[in-house]
Image (cartoon, rainbow, N blue to C red; front, side):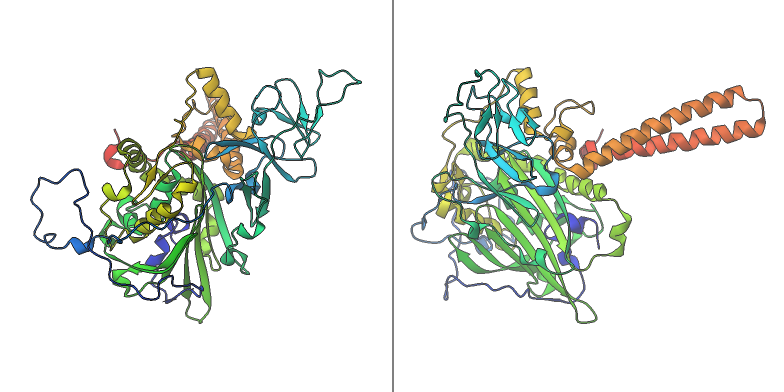
Length: 532
């Protein structure tokens, strides 16, 4: 199984093994439909001065069609949803973790019983970040004045309060409901509507016997809607990720076939495939608020059905920012996977996202600057961009219930500009508070949110452990090499000199290998034509 297959939703469709349509129940929202009308460009405020190429003239029907009539708007409240907050295995056991959902700052931690607890990330005393605090006997302590809070958000200790005084009832934090489901921590954002457990997503393939997955988490510098667009766009894979491994090749870029089978108020679903496959073997489903899965069933030579899933759980973390939990799994894994450590797959996943980062960030900037719906800016092709158009049209339905949105025909800009902390001390303190205690700003490099270390490693326990191990081994090899070369100089026997010099060479090679591994986990991918 290709390595890149484990880190991108669309790469396992290259398989030549017999496939079949996934046995997933879907509903068709429109029993009868007419061919969509051709896309018109008269609404654009600009035009192309160049002469159109011959094969494009008269071919405007290659674009995704426009639907006539008014946009259907449905009831929607972004707070009445469960958002993927974090991978349960990566939540520190002895420190609080600061996170955000849109512009809401929360703090997540484990109490004395190992239960997950979540508050608004500010102390009711003087608004200090509780995520900068510490855990004492299972209670979260604010490090400003030492106020301590139990799992229900009630203040149970104020050091400055007289012994005979009672703690004010108002000395409590605003709590959020969190649930652990299939290894992911989900948060319910509403304080008006009671949590609805039925809305927590359940992913059938991940509950199948023998199903195993590799999970990673990434912080990305662009809006969650742009991230989701990218994840549901199979057409870019052969180009953007060309030769990342052998499963992605730019010469494989070709028209795609899409079949939308379901449109609801909560999302859409359908099948897709490459034109050369003569079918649509892959199934994609998007579901509110920002969950995407891509599934495929492959029947082996023995007639056994193997299930493959790419799961993408996105969380908006503010204007121009998002966090993504990626989970790739299957019921049949190549034995070669066992030869590679977990951190290797994680850094390979980071490389895939870095390959897209530049143009997705610029796309984000243009959307914010132009302040118009995407139909005024995009040229969505039927044979590559159907899912993107479906997603933006879904945003038209529900965007009014979000803090801001970019829809196909509608748009609502953020009412308040993003807060930027200009003071260096405040910037550093804020970053420390928003990162796990086991991977904050250390000696590896200066604060840089575009760096792989801060986008992934600080959020991943396995990669942090690997980095510590590599750092220790590198130091150990360096010390042994220095001692060996010193003795090689001092001893007189030729055999001893040769043995010690050989030992020095081996240790230096080991130190170099460790440095290379450290770089793989802390340095961004740079395309060949962009390198110095």
